[in-house]
Length: 275
Image (tube, rainbow, N blue to C red):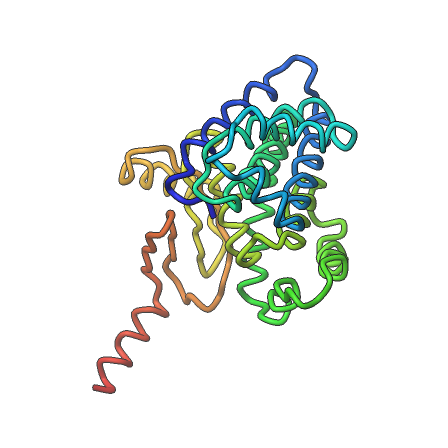
């Protein structure tokens, strides 16, 4: 998680990333390769405490840190990734871990940009949301994927087995790194961050909506329009079905939850009767 003092540094990294991604020579394959190389650079820093502290030490000369990063990574990554890592290490971070996290965030952004260019960003968002719901209903699965004592390759193998043939390649790559990264607090929280990052690319927020039965496209559209008016910004609605709500809707926008389900009202009534 990026701390508040490092947000300006992250903004500079993202600005440089957007500049790279807008380049005419950056196609889908190049964007996905860039993401892979940024993930690799983040993994390198996560596994090398001395190097991470050296490159993230804002009390030293910024250009010297950039030169060190370039000398270490020149033979390992392409020019675009090298440029971004050099930009990142020259920023002022409140913690060396924030530098590491910024590279992961930039890699996520590169994959989301590839999805947007391919016209499948909506599909990726929907797959992430639906997998989030699967995890919410399967404690054993989330425990297995989050268990840090199990080697990352075994956890990612389990993930790929679960997702095989059901999601797009970009969704698989986003989730695979979320599982293998030692910097993610949990896979569910990582999915939350990815959904917010995807929505931010289109300057909107995500509403996660749970209902007892499937909403029609007209209902979903009307709900999106109503939420957009309430929050004063575009809202992208993602829906899932959970028969346990027994009618009504659970709507989550950011940290705010609107629960109008029959199940919640019944639970409140039972609690009142028990007093």
